[in-house]
Length: 162
Image (cartoon, rainbow, N blue to C red; front, side):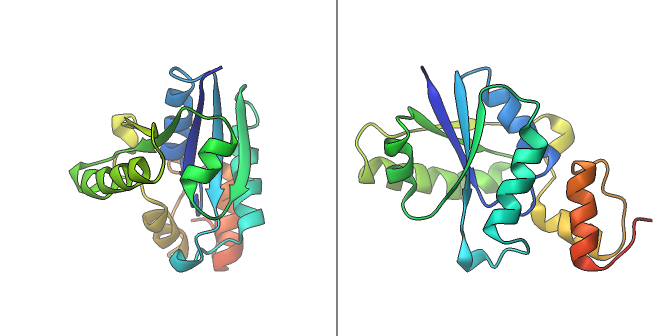
């Protein structure tokens, strides 16, 4: 079985993330969405909330598991028997960072592979930071996130849907 790991903070999960998960299922038999603790990013939602949102959004997708993780990604991947890490690339600006991380991970674990996927054109501009900004200003989120994720964002920000 070919297992891929799609790591990220997912604070919150967007339609762009979900698109990458769906595309990953064309390449891998099973995809593990690894929700990172990421304390240095100071996420809006705690780890349990982010895991819950990812599970909610992916519950209809067969062969997708969602797990929390902390520590080295290479260890998580190895422990799950995965073949590769999946990373989404929206723009050239993503490539430099992701390329560096792929090389570091390859140094840390021999045979470690990274698969880069691009999202559908309609999601290339999406970032979790932009979504949080739109939510903080009371903007509509339905084009960006699952409705229940949007409701949680508005609940956290104390704003109402416009």
